[in-house]
Length: 97
Image 1 (cartoon, rainbow, N blue to C red):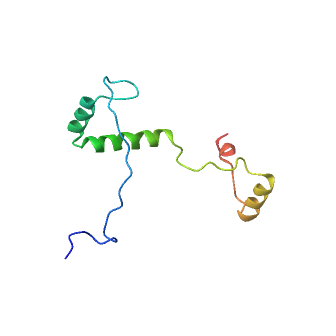
Image 2 (image 1 turned 90 degrees about the vertical axis):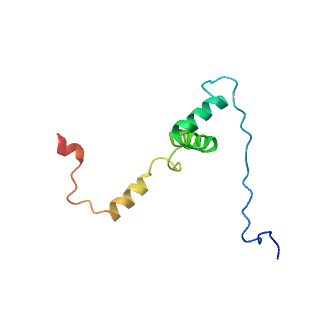
Image 3 (image 1 turned 60 degrees about the horizontal axis):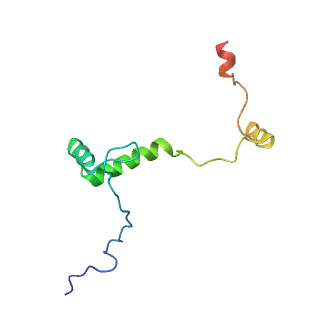
């Protein structure tokens, strides 16, 4: 019997990138020593620290939704008013003042 896993059970090789640590800590990079200190402090591996940092950076800088086509047209507003009952609606602005 072969020790090699069947094609269905083999994991797909993940694509990777090379990470070069900086010689000194800067705004745009850290040393290996800093990454190791973070890993020890957080109880994570250095790889996990990098993933956590990238996930935080992504949440902070990437939009959480797809860009839309811009403002609604008059026709779209008209269609919304036809579909959504307008009776009994009081604008928040009116109820405040």
